[in-house]
Image (tube, rainbow, N blue to C red; front, side, top):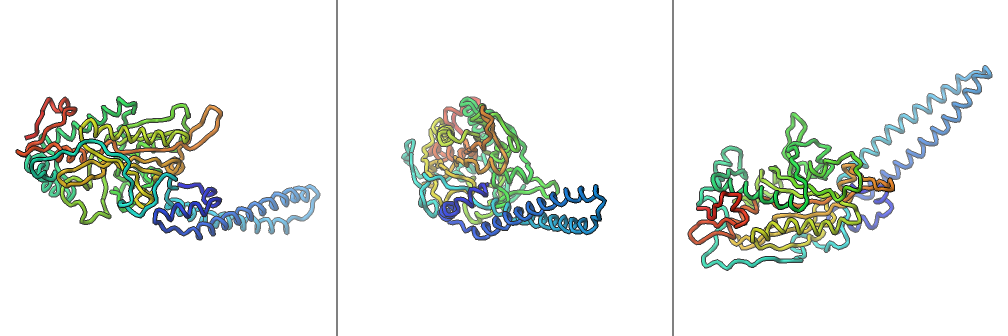
Length: 421
């Protein structure tokens, strides 16, 4: 969440940054509410000052035995007016907070201005794209022919966009999870196993609520939400706390199932594993000192992409333009893996720096050695989306006879199995 004072004092700048996202926001109403808020506060302070002065006079009158009935009546009227103004202030503040919760983050100056994914900026490529001597198949055909994923029975048990991994498919998925966790732990991340259900305050802290409620699965009776990503509970571990700045950067890694309605994706990626309602993901999260957060973003992106390097999967990194940037992010690098069965790159990780946007919402603060309190910057990225890594292996390591070679770094997690048949 952006600081109201900052928004008001830099209104033209904030308007410009918001417009570059192609987002409409009623800044006139926000400024009007702020004027109302300040006017009410000033009036209440004036009335309270007057009440305090009269209270002193009442004390003097009582000592002198004078009649205070008229003054008491007036004081009750002043108190009633203060109560009324307090209620009005509460309503104004509530509307202001609601508006601020839907105002997106300020885009970093290094982000290219653009309308959509077509304006994203490619900044790096890695790996050789394999030249197959046969027509490579998409992963859903490979998985079905090998009997390692059952899409139809997954839909029978739940609905479309749910799948069953079985046999060597389940083992490959589990191998990827363990490999990713082991790699990130070796790079200094602390493993976290968080709750998969969280409350609305936690969802609000990282920016999923109120804006993206339609994307969430909610347990109505318990007022809890299934997490769309481990970013939500892991970032909020330090919500409403003041931590010692000496522990920054805090580096955490978490494997969780993730749950998303994919409400806005009707008709997109209806086959295969690209867009599932339930999927596995390993998430890496950081809390950083503001002075170092951009360097920490580069390191986090390197840590995420190192998984693809170890697996020998070609990828590219793109910097998202303003129109494609997520609501809470100030800057994002997407890592996209090459999928020969679909002849394209597809996102497998988004690595973002949210600066103090999430820490303000979640009230995550840090205190330095001089007792100064500040909002640390939050960062996260998939390290990686496990299902998408799974399908990338199927498509990149497929053989002409329909088998799939297991990448060497995964074989120790699969009891030495070299080929999925």
